[in-house]
Length: 233
Length: 233
DNA sequence: TTCCATGTTTAGCCTTAACTAATAATATTG
DNA sequence: CAATATTATTAGTTAAGGCTAAACATGGAA
Ligand SMILES: [Mn+2]
Ligand SMILES: [Mn+2]
Ligand SMILES: [Mn+2]
Ligand SMILES: [Mn+2]
Image (cartoon, rainbow over all chains, first blue to last red):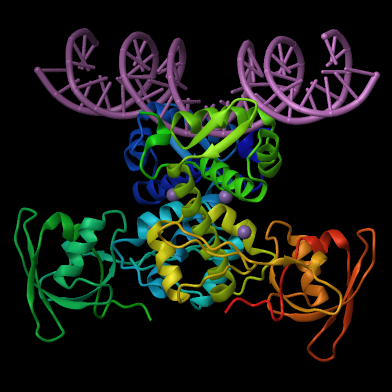
């Protein structure tokens, strides 16, 4: 029996691959070798090697030169890791004074060391939160997760009022920059103008002193918003 | 540069070896290969291999066939791991409802994944505790630790009143048994009788209903007590 | 003082998970 | 449609950290 087939003995590498593959699969529809390599900062041949092992263990299906897809078992494992990660991030910010730009790194390590027992205790202490500090939905214990219904700030029409709901947790520099702009989760603003040719977007915060800020197009693409009035009750 | 010489990139194995060697050194005066192997549940040749690596990295000194001794760097590292372990145990019991029989296993994994930053935040949230849930002193941030001044229950004279101060954290079965006897940290009792030839010891709890319990000699040896009146201010 | 039990190390092997260099498959483009 | 660029895989190496079997030290008993 290979080491991978043990019940809860997956290595840090293994868990991070599964999590990354899940994320790529949901975002891009498929997980290609080079995308996995990029996300995990390893060389492509390392991915090929790990894909071989994961595939042999029944955690994913691999079509050579085409990409990989998680099996049911693989997906369930990925969801458990994702739940651990997001509960940890929420706990660290809510209970231990971490800010949203520093939790990811810590959770990235802890997610492989905590027991499910500890995660459930943390979840309980938090009142079973639905979202992590970056707005990402926390998978439930049984492995289901909501698909966040957000619109990129880059696609919010001029004149609309929107609320910031989801940001990426991966780049802490970026998160510090967002905070410095006043772009925290839940903040409400109006889109004042959008320059053409993927140009910058100007917003005005709803709350006094109603400051204006300019956001680059690429950054705006990565910010998930809900347009006021589009709310699903 | 070997992987071991990186600033904070010590592996789980490495940290557990250093911690174990520190504990054996303080308890037995020296750390022998077989003792390390026993404590870590690995084969003696695995210890020889790791000792080679640790010695090459300057974390310990090895005299072949004689044993190992931590260097200053090795000892400081061991103390940091021990601090992380004990803060974690305290946090889990104080803040997340863990009982003293289940924290050790969790801490044994987490101690290698948490950052010093997280540990200091936990310590802060706990009010910088001096002892872990088993009564073991928590090393300070600068790497000093108190030597617990306790007497084995097996050596407390009949008629004396004593307080339970220190138990081993390694055996959770044993910890559950102690709890079932009412033997928690801080509990006060009188030694009623001691059978000769390493025989059982009978104690009577000071608090009503003043139950009597019988404790085997070996178990009594592992219980650290302070005799009432011997207290150091 | 030689022999033997015990404990330790060496030799040789395995798995995981990374790497680089070379090769093979697929996609793009002239 | 052939040449080329991109992407993926294979081949071969390395290091950590485990294992078993065999060789080696050491200290006590015959
Ligand atoms: Mn994160
Ligand atoms: Mn991770
Ligand atoms: Mn412990
Ligand atoms: Mn450990």
